[in-house]
Structures are given as C-alpha cells and as structure tokens.
Length: 173
Image (cartoon, rainbow, N blue to C red; front, top):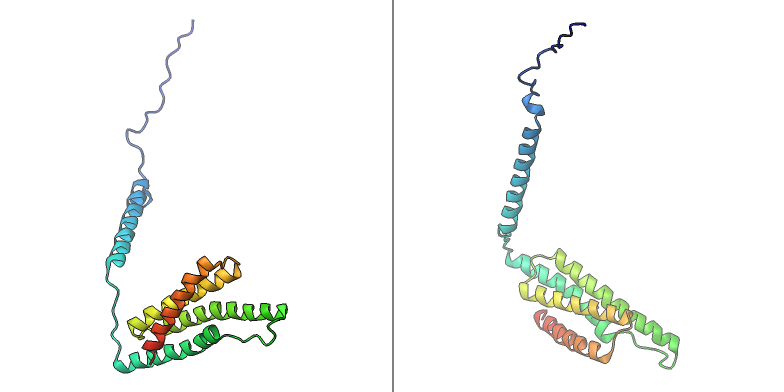
C-alpha cells in the first residue's frame, strides 16, 4: 500500500489585497449619493427662492405700455372690425372671410403674447388684460378651426372677449 499523505496547499492570504481607495465601490456609491443630495438641496433652494423683482422706471413702464397698446390696435381692428364680405352670397367668399377671422384670432393672440413677453415693464393690469384676451382669441380660433363652435361654446367666449377688449381699450387711453 502506498502511503498517501494529504497534500497541503499553499496557505491562503488571511487578508485580500485591497483596491486602492479611489477604486473602491463603496467610495463611488457614497460620492454618487453625496452628488444626488447636493442636487436635491440646490433644486429645492432654487424652487423656494423668491423671484428677483425688477423695478422699472416710469419712462420704461410708459414705453412698454405704448408698445403693448400699439400691438393691440391692429389686433383689435382685425378681430372686431374684421374683413367685410364683398360677395355675401358667394360661398367661396364666405369661406375666405371665415379663414381670415380664424387667422386674425390665432395670429392676434400669438402676436399679443409675444409683444407682452418682450415688454416686461408693461403695467400689471394691462399685462393681465392682454394675456386674457390672447387666451380667449386663441381658444376661439381653435374652436372655429375644429368646427366645435356651437352657440353654447362661442357665446360665452364672445362675451369674455368683448369685456376683455373693452378693458384694454380703457387701459390704453
């Protein structure tokens, strides 16, 4: 019989070789967590911080008011005065006039909104009235385009538009 002796393997290291600290998975996890926490704190601080208020001179406000009122004049004319139909019995002329009215509403609302955005010094009451008219014009234009302009839908919008337009007329005098 052969004498078999158990083989002894090389002793295992009692401690593993450690990765350098900059390659540690634990460090990467903590760094990502710290960055995420900082991002959340910055986002909350930005959200809760009051908006910077800018005061405008009387001259800046007057110029902004004049510019907004100047933008209002052609919109008012195109929507309220409109395009007369030179051929009332002609269905093509009726469609052309209706298309012009829709274009005036959608374009006028957008034009007023863009003018107002370019004039931050406009008085708050005028800005509110112009925004309201722009919203109503665009809602009416889309309603007409979608052919959902029933009297029950359009009636209140026309009423709102008339009262909002009168408010702008009063503010622009």
